[in-house]
Image (cartoon, rainbow, N blue to C red; front, top):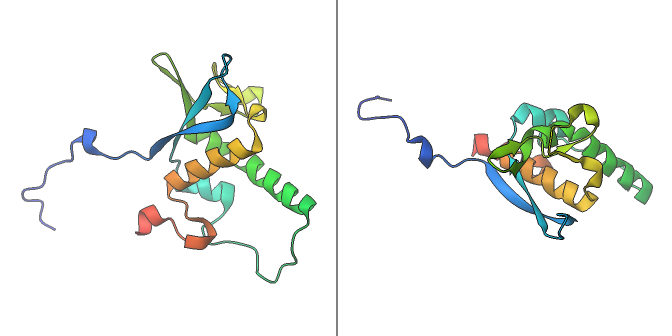
Length: 149
């Protein structure tokens, strides 16, 4: 392709893979809603956390018990630590607090909130939003649609 007539894109016109989500259960000290900024992470981080898009258990697998479903959900949320760490932030005045949530004190930064304070429903919302922004299509799409579409 010829570079004649091409010029670099104005950075202000680039759509960024960022979304602010409203948490359903976490509240501010005065009872207000909490909003967290979610953004795309590197696809390799998503793959480490959730496997290759399209990978899933064989269909001939026996149905899971409720206890097995809970254990799988806990394992998936625990493995999402890197996604949450790299893909979430809050604002504090003019500063950005990243990560918004920490799994343990070793990974906390001033202003970050312990992940244990977040409800399972909100955790799923946060992780799914970051993965969607990353382009992670999961088992249904079996690809990173942002890269392949």
